[in-house]
Length: 252
Image 1: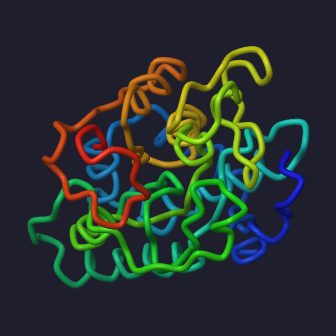
Image 2: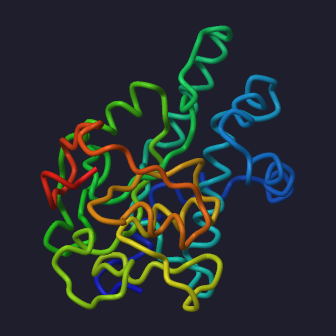
């Protein structure tokens, strides 16, 4: 684990609310959520089986249950959005007031972000001690997600500085996050990188999706190592404003 980050500080903001989910209800909805696609989840919410708040609380419950204990942690989550549940409740209110409105598929979906993507609600560190208190505005892609109704759940670990300043470091290691571990075999399989936490978080069922970045293999590698689907956008298709940069011709 990281020598400079206290996990209690990371998880304190929503501790009581995250773990208030009844264990029996958690077991009941687990089969409705894990392994399901976004359209399937949206269908269940529209049908009244789930709510956006319950979906968000489910993922927080899993994160808090597995990421805090030393025996199960993947060192994946670097920050929790303190407004996540409030944002999810607002999505339920919108659904109640305008049930038949057309919505983007990501509406109400909990999403995790690689911690080199700027967010106003949480620091953006790139895993480096030098940026531990770095506060910014939201990146372009964060604005786009929020504009379409996604719930930003938190920030995830990565290869420090997106593996740019370190020669020979293990992939998925950062000073602030420690060593990201693969949910299919902690300390047995590599996580891939540099979007290590984005891959491990989805594989571990911590969110409906996660955003990573790539300069050379940084989305493709963790996707393969964690048996998840990764999409590398064509370079320049999405604005990179608000993302810690490496290469103006390769970053995406």
